[in-house]
Structures are given as C-alpha cells and as structure tokens.
Length: 236
Image 1: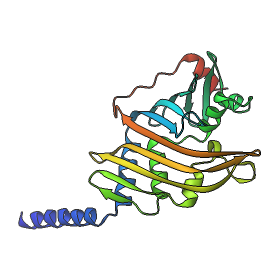
Image 2 (image 1 turned 135 degrees about the vertical axis):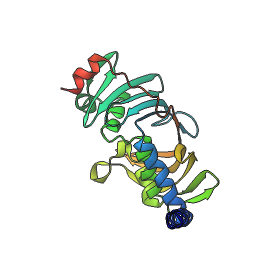
Image 3 (image 1 turned 90 degrees about the vertical axis):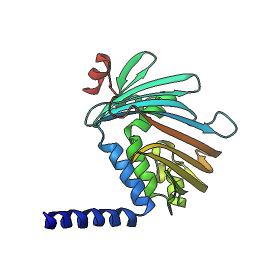
Image 4 (image 1 turned 180 degrees about the horizontal axis):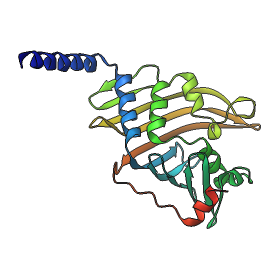
C-alpha cells in the first residue's frame, strides 16, 4: 500500500515538473493539438484590411468533423461563397450551383476562384494555429494568452496569395507580423493574426495591413450537413 502510494506520488511530482518545464510554445502547441483531436468544432473568422476593403477582407465561418466533412462559408464584399471538402476532394457553390473544386480553381479570376484555391491548401484553425506557433520567433505567455512576433519568413508566408510562392507567386517585401492566441481549459479558443508588408504581383504593388481573427465555438456539438448536390461534385 505504502509502496503504491509512493510510486503514485513520484509520478504526480514528475508530471508536475514536466508541465512546469514546458515552454510557452510547447504549451501552445499542445493546446492546438488537443483541439485537433476533438471530434468536431465550429469557428467564425473576420479579416480586416486597414483603410477598409482590400484583397482578402471579409467574414466567414466554418465547421469540421474529424475524419469527415469540412464546411466553409465566406463573405467577400458582396459575394458569399460556400464550400465543402473531404480528404482531397472538394466542391464550391457559385451562383447557386455546385461545382467541383478543381473546376472552380481553374476558372476565371474572381472571389470563387480565390476561395477554391485557398480551399485546396486549407488548414483547419487547429492546424493553422500550430503552424503559426512554429513561425513565431519567441512565444510569451501572460495568463491564458500567448503571443509573439512572426519571423520574416513566417510573415512572408502569410502574405502569399492563396499560399502560392516560388516563381509564380508575388514578390513580398517589408514583411512583418504578430500573432496572439487564447487558451481556455487547455484548448485553443481564439487567435488573432496581424501581418503587414508590400506585395508586388503582375506589376501591381499593394500595401497590406491585415488582421484576421478566428474564434472557436461549439466544440463537441458541431454537426456538418452537406447538400446532396455538393456530395455528387465531391465524387467527380
């Protein structure tokens, strides 16, 4: 009895020491991974460019089921685009008609094409938060809030159009950014990404000052309902 009690006490102390020695970045990564391990959750997102309007500005919301469907709705200016994805298959709703993600991504430039290309490389909030944490030079903790500045390369990666880089991507300069994360009950509950820089693409220069806020909701109670028309396009 005493021996078992001693072993239990030692294990408890060892766990406490390991938790105490974990860095803020490790704690944050753990909180993001715990969210990813949940069966389902929802989120709402708002992106604002300083000065109003601008490329990529708008509001959106999403739902995800682990191993199942991802659903997104994004409003950009006067357009609302709905999309679903499962594994590497996707469908997007354009002018009340569903089409496959591959067809939408290869269409004429516009809001739907932009969303389709983003969806091809889409990361869930949990995955994106973990990725962002890895792009921060040093994570600092203040209570349940974690924050830090992005590395220059990390900031550049957030200024790419649809995540495209290389020879076909824009030229990025003066890139900088910061990110803040909120953790509740050991789970990621919200994060805010701010990026600034100059983007040059096809001879056009654009100054970007963008803030994206994502709030996690309905963990464990989210249901993703996919229309039959969208399911048909997922299989095409």
